[in-house]
Structure formats: C-alpha cells, structure tokens
Length: 192
Ligand code: PAN
Ligand code: ZN
Image (cartoon, rainbow, N blue to C red; front, side, top):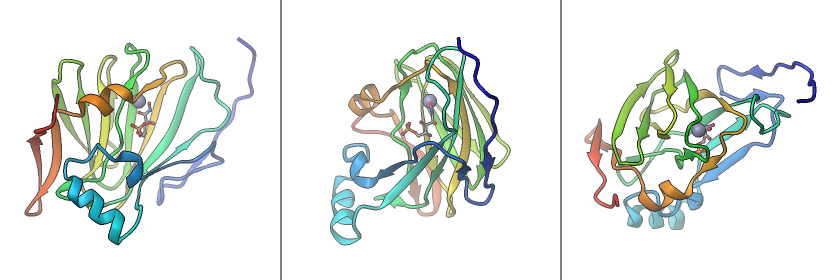
C-alpha cells in the first residue's frame, strides 16, 4: 500500500454537507422508478411537480476504493412521500457481502431498514446521535420519516462495493408508510 496524507473534512451539522467533498451523488425520483409501491403517485408527481430530488450523498474525497481504506460520507434525504411511502434511499447489499458499515444519525428523524438475503427485516429508528451497526450480509436502506431533512454519516470498508441489482429485483419485504400521520411498517405486497 502506498502512503497517503492524512486529511480531514468539515461536516456542516445544519445541512449534512461535507466540505471539501468528492463528487456529490443526487438521486431524483426518476432514478427510483420501480422502487416505490404506488406507481400512480410516482407518475403523478413526475407529471405535475417534475423530477423531485429525493436524496444526496457527499463522499470524502480521494479515498481509494481498496481493502484497508475506510470510505465515508454523508447522506441527506429530503422529506416527503410517494403515495403513502416515505422518501428513502435505493438500498443495497455490499458487493462483498461480508463487509459491515456504521451509520451515525446527524439531523432529523428516520429509520434504517436492514434485510438478509432470506428477506428477514430489522427496522431501526434513527435520530441525531444514534450509532447504528450494519453487520456483514445485511442489505440496508434509510427512510426519512420526519418533516425535516434526515442526515447521517456513514463509514464502510474501501473494498465493500455496492450491489443495487438484488434490491432492484426483490425490493424490501417491508415498507415504511404514513398511515394517517403514523409511521407504520407494512408488508410489501410486491416483495418477491
Ligand atoms: C451509504 C449509502 C447512501 C445512499 O453511503 O450509499 O446512504 O444509499 P444508496 O447507496 O442505497 O443509494 C452506504 O451505505 N454506503 O455503503
Ligand atoms: Zn452500504
């Protein structure tokens, strides 16, 4: 391994932005077409309001994606729903399934949904100060269940990689929905 310089970034606790940052990933509604259950609501939002920004990811710059390194960054999920379903990330397994991750809640209110290959789900509410451990072999998705932006810090192994395909195909077995103002975990009728 070649020697690299230590560095730091500054986290804006109000917005969740990192400075300096690597490329910022923005995921809009159209990037998540088949992920929300209510396809009519999805089409209606696109037609009436346009392609809304669902979440952004800031990643600390210049960390090589190799074993031994720790990639890290922040995610900000903006508040809102598609139908009854709260805004969420795409969700993924690590391409190397035996790589773990740590999430630290910064601002706002959300949930971390975790799921095994067998479809077993854990639902973990997250607030500022929650330190969540995502063990190896668990897919993970975060959901903004509050009325403000929900932000958190993540740190994961440099060689973990991201596998989105499995979740795109199978989805999550449970959904977080707004039922008359109550955050409710329900079965996903489309789960394969
Ligand atoms: C996080 C996620 C981030 C965005 O940094 O990548 O919250 O979620 P998706 O990657 O599912 O779109 C992480 O878990 N990295 O491994
Ligand atoms: Zn991850």
